[in-house]
Amino acid sequence: MDFAFDARTQELREKLLAFMDEHVYPAEQVAREQRAALASPWDTPAIVEELKAEARKRGLWNLFLPDAEHGAGLTNLQYAPLAEITGRSPQLASTALNCAAPDTGNMEVLAQFGNEQQKKQWLQPLLAGEIRSAFAMTEPEVASSDATNIETRIERDGDDYVINGRKWYISGAMNPLCQIFIVMGKTDPDGEDIRRQQSMILVPRDTPGLTVKRAMQVYGYEDHSHGGHAEVLFENVRVPASNLVGEEGGGFGIAQARLGPGRIHHCMRLIGMAERAIELMCQRAVARTAFGKPLAQQGVVQEWIADARVAVEQLRLLVLKTAWLMDTVGNKGAHTEIQSIKIATPRTVVDIIDQAVQLHGAGGVSQDFPLAELWAGARTLRLADGPDEVHQRSLARREIKKYL
Ligand SMILES: Cc1cc2nc3c(=O)[nH]c(=O)nc-3n(C[C@H](O)[C@H](O)[C@H](O)COP(=O)(O)OP(=O)(O)OC[C@H]3O[C@@H](n4cnc5c(N)ncnc54)[C@H](O)[C@@H]3O)c2cc1C
Image 1 (tube, rainbow, N blue to C red):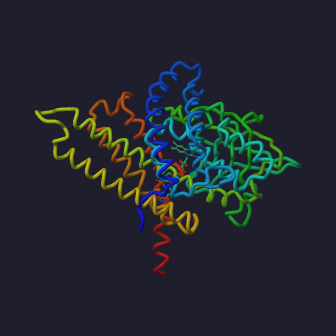
Image 2: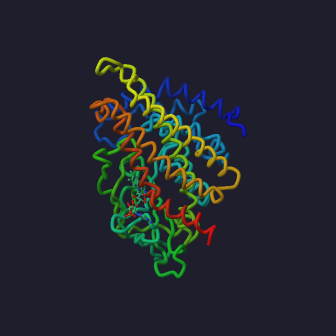
Image 3: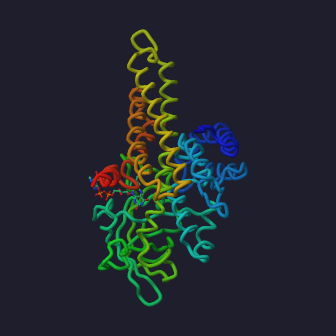
């Protein structure tokens, strides 16, 4: 078993690490200040566009997309260590590289299932980083972790479809650059096959009847840098039938295909978040003295740091193994591992960040360190893309089945 990075990964890692040091970390404070001065906090600070231009110039662009025609053509195993690095500055780095959720998943859907017209109109500007996008599935009225509950209706009417429904926590939708929504809803609510009732359809932001109603908060944060998480109303929204993605009834299958890579990307970035937390923990532990000795000399602090290091190494190995399986046997063959990392990574990383918060005292919950925001972001990943319990249920059922 060879644990070394291959030459291409190594080269991109070095480029990316330099980009982070020279541009991304210094931009964190600048972005905050620029955003505070914007007319709307949902607009994009100028520094973000500068970072995007610089990343593109350095060949650090669309690295997430395995499709060599549209993206960098990296395998999941090659992309994993790069996504990890971007997780160290989650507010800026993945956006700078055009590798931010939910655009990544949406681009994958369009590349894989979109027709030529959809690719030209939406995938191309997304790949160029000119627009952003949203994926609208979750609904406030129903338990959306069970996707069969979705109530939004997509009804055929002549050459059009008419959409009615209410969605929330639609990431990215507060950003005016978010120009296109991939909406999941039922085209055949009474269909016998529960997995064929739903479809996905493209809805441009300016379509009459689409209202971005409000920004939902995350532990009191509005998550400006990710374009927020919006509540969105669809009231008699009419789009041409050609806006359907794939075939009618194919929504469930597309959602499954979309979530595999999305989940591993989140886990890779989470590991980067944990690394940042460990780094901050160590810096703080050697810099602060309490009761006559540096915090770094307290046994409990050493235990936190050691346990965090062990946990991160374990998670990284599992994530890399999952990436390798996705490359070699496909997303379906890597199902158990994708669920394992989705269960294990957010909760472990939340705990690591929490200990880093603790070590920073009041500073840990303040705006002067990135820890509070990192914690809130990591915590949401125990819910987003399916709550822990749903993955545990499905993983356990597959394990038990072997003995039936
Ligand atoms: C920050 C953030 C961003 C998001 N971005 C998007 C987005 O861009 N687009 C989008 O469509 N959605 C998005 N979501 C929504 C997210 O995908 C849903 O919140 C998630 O799928 C759970 O659905 P729900 O909130 O309806 O919870 P429910 O389905 O109501 O579930 C609530 C709880 O019930 C428990 N539960 C459910 N099923 C089981 C089970 N089988 N066994 C045991 N316990 C169970 C779990 O503890 C679960 O957390 C986002 C959410 C957050 C927090």
